[in-house]
Amino acid sequence: MTRARIALLDASHGSEHTRRNFRRELDADLVEYDVTEGDVPTTFAFDGVVVTGSRASVYWDEPWIPAVKKWVGEAVDAGHPILGVCWGHQLVADVLGGEVTAMDAYELGYATIERTTADSRLLDGIDDRFTAFATHSDEVVELPPGAELLARNDRSIHAFRKGSVYGVQFHPEYDQETARRVTEGKRDGEASEELVDRALDSIDDENYAAACETKQLFDNFLQIVAESRLNAGEQAHS
Image (cartoon, rainbow, N blue to C red; front, top):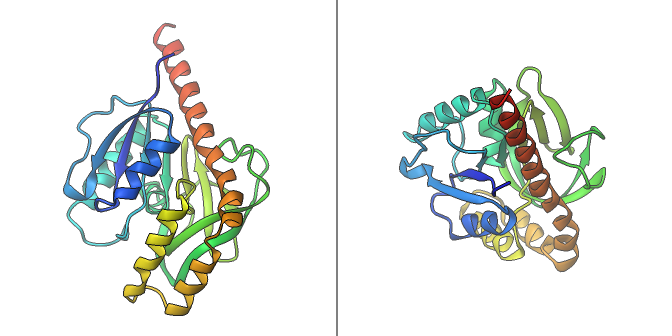
């Protein structure tokens, strides 16, 4: 089977780290779109979709956001496996009928997250209690109707699934350089100095090594994509 063709909807406002990180972690042919510049796919000729993080909120009145929501909704209807990360997690939850709101305070730094179900394909190979880097001030407060909660901590819902659509609030793609730069960027008033300093203290070799376990979910997602391709091929020839 040929490599999967994945649409990468990059909502990072041109961050140099985002595409580098996803290119490294996804062993697939990525077709990249800078959606914040209005570059939204005009086709659904993909095997799967990944939606990245963003400094935007899904409920902001930004001209590019409705077009992304519309295309992702149509991709859901087309049956594509979809993985949303951070803002992407919130976007797919919103598109599917969930609710996203602002948090009282940032979640920033390496966090401990717990799986809530043992049979999640996306989280196969990841411990029931795991470490991951989180940076967000919005959260999914209500899952879409019929969605399954996969992971959470005392701050937020961190993973869910509905059909072949998955969302993770944490950042499995981050390396330490990205984590540090993103965290330092919160000194502009988005987060308190104390929180930023504490998050920076958490970015060390030990926590990063522990968090690398979550990178397994990218291989798991590509396996889900491969199975979807196989099923589509069988249906086409039946």
